[in-house]
Length: 409
Image 1: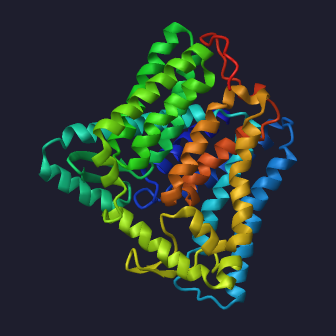
Image 2 (image 1 turned 90 degrees about the vertical axis):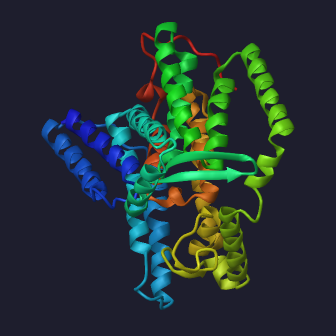
């Protein structure tokens, strides 16, 4: 049953990464339910006693995925909010994916490795798409239509100042920060024979994240490995990495100023939409009731950036305030940051690379709505499972191929 459970989890990760909108397979919810069914059946058949789930983790999941969303939904209907259109229950379904953390802890499943394998498959898909569409506008246009209708990817060309490049952006690409951090950690801690393969996997994932084309993906695709290397390296190696980073910044300041300015130009279409969202939020938050108590999870409002009614924008943390109000949104901010504080425990040093990956993901989600999706909740469940784990031995990644680690910063 344990093998079947892991296979089901792997399929769930495949669907979450390659069909994040669930428009093609419609398997995300069935796979999540079947995961729990297999888990319960395996427990009943084996009749093995399992260590209790840490009460702190149960409280965390209950607050994050049940109490706060249901409170917001209840307030929405008590205020007389319309039931159509309304997306609150759809978002509640996404929040419930956080319960995966319970299975990961009880079965001691290393979900980081499994998801990193799936993300490496995504990297291969991104690079293959880049190669096959190179200088082929017909194929690029054909794939764009498929990606747009399925909600899986977008493909095209971006231009900033004199820089023009093609991109293949899968909507789950921000998750690549996890595989980048994982393979960076394995590169630093593995013995020489295993190190080469991890370097190869790291470079593969890095190339894919750079090819995904968004500014956040490019920035954190480069920063994530560097930060993990700094975290786990000796003082001498840290100095060398800092020097490399300074050289890169100097080159960028010398030759890339125009490109950087173009990326953050308010006239850029993407930036203009986000600035329009900010203006919309400022108008909404001028109403004290909306500012402190929100409009309700899944409620709609008119977005001048989109030019239509919407229940969510890319500005995730402002959207928390609009949906939940400043009071509950502040609680959510604390819940999102709490696993970072837990993971900093020295007993969990083998999982400290997750601090880098998760922090990078949270920053990327400043302008990306992926955090409040089921895909985002799957990542949070992995991080929460590690953070609330009873002990580091549950997640010990040290094998015969792994050398003694340096004490991280």
